[in-house]
Image (cartoon, rainbow, N blue to C red; front, side, top):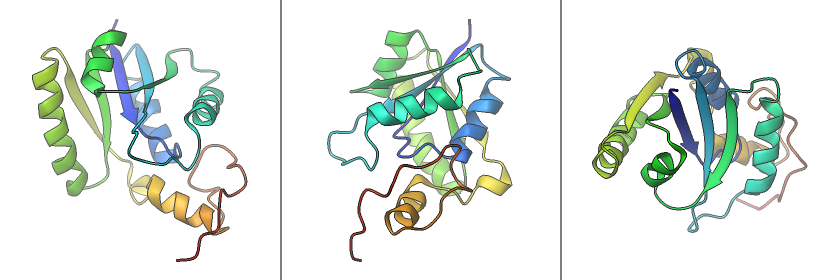
Length: 158
């Protein structure tokens, strides 16, 4: 079975992420959407809430599961039996960043192959950071996420 890990913070999970997973199901038998827990970052939406939301988005797709993890992505891939990492690339800046991480992951777990999918052009401008900012200040993000966002967490002054 070809299992791929699709790691990220998914804070929040965007239509760009959805596109990568859907396209990935054409390549892999099972995709684990893996929400990393970065202790140095404060999340906008709690991990447990995001797990439930993503599970609901993929409720009709049994080949997609959702888990959270702490620690190194390569170690989590090994623990889950995943031999592929699935990553989306929006631009060359993403490639430079992801290429470095892919090399490090391969060093830690030599059987781990990273597969890059180029983001669909209509979704390339979407980022979780931009979505959080729009939402935080009361703007509509309905066109960017595949689920209704909960009420804004805060309206901090710039």
